[in-house]
Amino acid sequence: MNPTESSRDTKVIPLRSKIHPTAIVDPNAVIGPDVEIGPFAIIGPNVEIGAGTKVGPRAIIEGWTVVGSNNKIYTGAVIGNEPQDLKFAGEKSYLFIGDNNIIREYATISRGTAGGGGETRIGNNNLIMSYVHVAHDCQVGNHVVVAHASGIAGHVVIEDRVVIGGLAGVHQFTKIGRMSMIGAHTMVTKDVPPFIIVDGNPAKPYGINIVGLRRNGLSPEFRTEIKRAYKILYRSSLSVAQAIEQMEQELPGNAEIDHLLRFLRSADRGICR
Image (cartoon, rainbow, N blue to C red; front, side, top):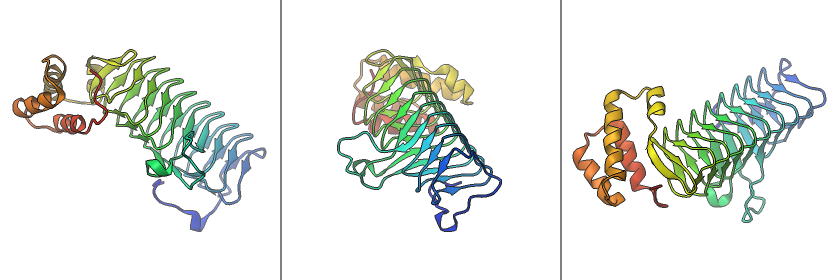
């Protein structure tokens, strides 16, 4: 199911969907084929759930929320709840969740706010572990892992293939670059550049995420260029602007270095250093 599309005009609850008799499913909800909804789960009137998704016992999906196909939502998760933002005034806002995500026990994911574009988005193939909170207006990419009890504040952008350790905190409006790794118990208050490991409170860089780069298929040549970029950025005593200029002069253009440079240019909050 494409989370940007709605099937509300042709609402059908297929007979082969497995809805427990104690579940409360609003008659206006759109439930796709082969959906399973467990005991005492609650599905609100503006919710759409794609084919093959499984909703566990006592989970709640509410608000204007679109859930794609083949997701697994575990016991007690609260999906699409109102934003925890004092500026929220009850306006219509959205949550879009893609396909093949795992959302574990008691995780919470809020809808967007008018001040943040009106929507929260979760991509595909993500693992959001138990007690994680993803706040309003967050934009989460694909193949992201967020470990137990981490808190992602409002307006955060998390790029693809990021790993966030347990009990980490991510400050509002920060950006987490692709294939980076956040250590457990870390407090992120500034942007985390792609491909690196940060740890501590406040977060400090601890080198390249070599294991992540290998697992994601980056060639040895690309990994070498990323190491060179890291040395320029963190071990040369240059300002970020000077490091960008030196990388542009010394490093050959490739997709990963180009992405890193774009990220650094747009790091309005500054980066972890």
